[in-house]
Image: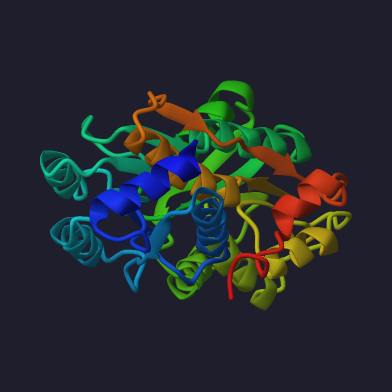
Length: 321
């Protein structure tokens, strides 16, 4: 039905070869997470016979550039937009403008203020934060000094993860002392590495660390390795480390015992469902306002299970050149 609808819409647009255009706008394009989102969007593109246009800001903290990307697609009169907003407030106005131009917007990954979008397709990020807290609290034996390195201000998804982590720690692990929770990693692995170095230099006694996304997790991992504090699981002086998302190096660190847990989303499913939801809305199907794409905790003990291996190391070459 969706393929037939797409063909009919192509004829309406003027030629049989002109497909429905759906702009997919990530927060950035370099992290493995966004490559998986892209691959999922391409799968939906091929399955439903539409055309996706993938374009994101060069830097994952460039709100102004992302606003410009959205505005350019509005001016181009694309049929729909799938957007992962860098800032829950800064992107609200251009999304509202899209609605006035009858361009439906599906929000993915990170929430947006207001109600101008048709659906929100994302992880239960608060739950992801609680999973991280429970893992870290348990392997610490419910006591010790813990650092949480935040991602960056304005990112609704990571803010929810951070809040879930803090709430669970305070409620279930009163013996854990949260010694630093107000530092931000910034948008890249390099900024995360620098902030992580500062934290490790400031606090000589740290028992556990939590980071809420791929770049902050990798930046902290590098800092721990360089400082000689990325200890193995069985070391009595190990800094227990729980992070978010995956990449080849993070997976290896999990296997080596330098990371003790990774909370995983399903970015491929997120990209796929974002585009699918936009197409369904265009064909008159009633879409649900919230779609949960799932979240799980991965450890060295379960990382080789087939389903989890597919999330840790997705095969993206089938969809991306």
